[in-house]
Length: 304
Ligand SMILES: [Fe+2]
Ligand SMILES: [Fe+2]
Image 1 (cartoon, rainbow, N blue to C red):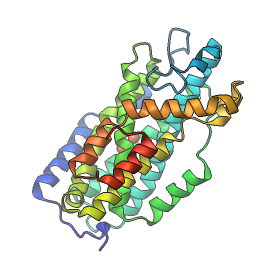
Image 2 (image 1 turned 180 degrees about the horizontal axis):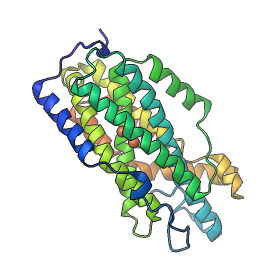
Image 3 (image 1 turned 180 degrees about the vertical axis):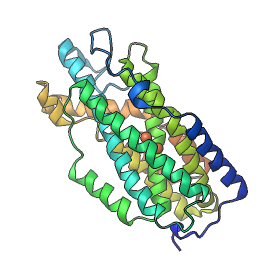
């Protein structure tokens, strides 16, 4: 029986936790229009990417870039991250609506929290698209395979798998945002976006974990393996949206020379700075075995 048919009644304690998430959102709304200093000029005082996530930083080729190229590459890469968050949140909302209309009780805590989450994710999407406009860049859309995966999963995959996918992306987004905020000279628009997002996403993650706890706790080895691969693939798909040949060409760099080092550089940096929470989450319910470890290491360079 699919998850969305009301198979599982939430425990009283879970309902209480969800109710408190609703109250927190209601009493502490953050308006991106006023919270984020949108008018901050794109001056030379600011950085657009922390070195710890900047694809080519640290590679010998990095010094062959002019300052202007470094700046444009940083803006383009952070813009890709903003684009991919907005895009994946649009997909998440598509799924949330699918899930929402399958619930029978539209006064339940679960139903009401999903409405809160859809509202917040809609604000986030506005915020991400405005950030791209503010940076003055043109983003590169997802590849056909990304689009197919997004379309297929939101429409056809079971709800527990899609919730797991949404949570996986929220976890890495959270870590990426935290890393962005650690850079002291980061453009304030970006640091405030990361802060707002981290605050609201922490509640979304708590909600998803409540819904998924039943599945992860009672899962046998096969299901744990599937969940682990789902988390891994989602992170992989997300990360592979950031470094694109088109961006390199646009700023006057030959992709034949720069693409591979940039791709590898981000893979390695992402592994060090953005995977910790995801690994902890998967470890918590025993999602690592010899098979999943191979996939995580191969696709994400995960140190497990
Ligand atoms: Fe979000
Ligand atoms: Fe979220």
